[in-house]
Amino acid sequence: MPVSYNREMSVYHAIYQRRTAWKFKDEPVSRSAIERMLDAAVWVPNHRMTEPWRFFVSEKGSEMRLNIGKLAYDTTFERTGDEKRSINSYEKIIGPPYLICLYAIPGEDEVSTQENYASVCCAGQNISLAGTAEGLSVAWDTGGACRNPNLKQVLGADEDWIMVTMLLIGVPGERPSSRRNPVSKWVEWSALESEKLTM
Ligand SMILES: Cc1cc2nc3c(=O)[nH]c(=O)nc-3n(C[C@H](O)[C@H](O)[C@H](O)COP(=O)(O)O)c2cc1C
Image (cartoon, rainbow, N blue to C red; front, top):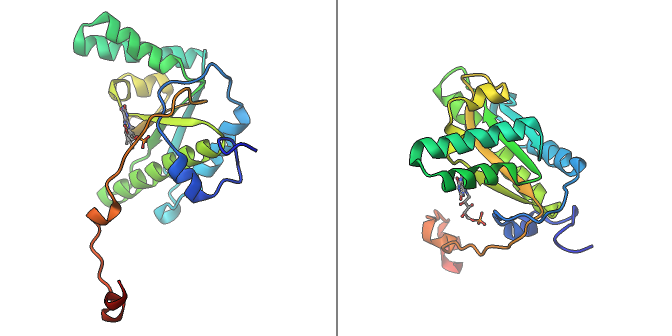
């Protein structure tokens, strides 16, 4: 089985293999792959078991997808007045085989709202990693369409839900490079004296 499609892939392999691709091959994605990814999403930690995630899944060509695309067009046009950029925004949304709008529900106070949001971000990452094992790219898009005030109404989301991201999903048609600083740059260790001697 090729590494790019391996549901037995190790977690570490998926973490390092995952990349954000914006170009997708003109290949269909099976609904069962998306269902497996969604199932993986809800196995993230969530404090007080609030299950704070809400998903809106739209297939390419569906009426919902076209409506989200129109919102993307409007958002860019209102901001820039540039028709070409607005068409690009529309095409970015309508192109991928699957698009998931991911929301977090608010908690009963600020802390639990924050915890819910954090948990839904974890759910998004589980979708990304499971997608990698399925041979798919999952691109996080928090661009203009996410903040369009009409989006919740178009989807049927509650007004007080918190938009986390849109996920654009398909078979990657590119493998962009990515980089990180060595993690040691960001870490402070508090080690036992005996451990310090061996480090
Ligand atoms: C919360 C979040 C929001 C993002 N929103 C956007 C976005 O609106 N547009 C975009 O081009 N990339 C977006 N990205 C993707 C990042 O640009 C991408 O992860 C980064 O370039 C690193 O590439 P890699 O994922 O391949 O390592 C987002 C990522 C996260 C986690």
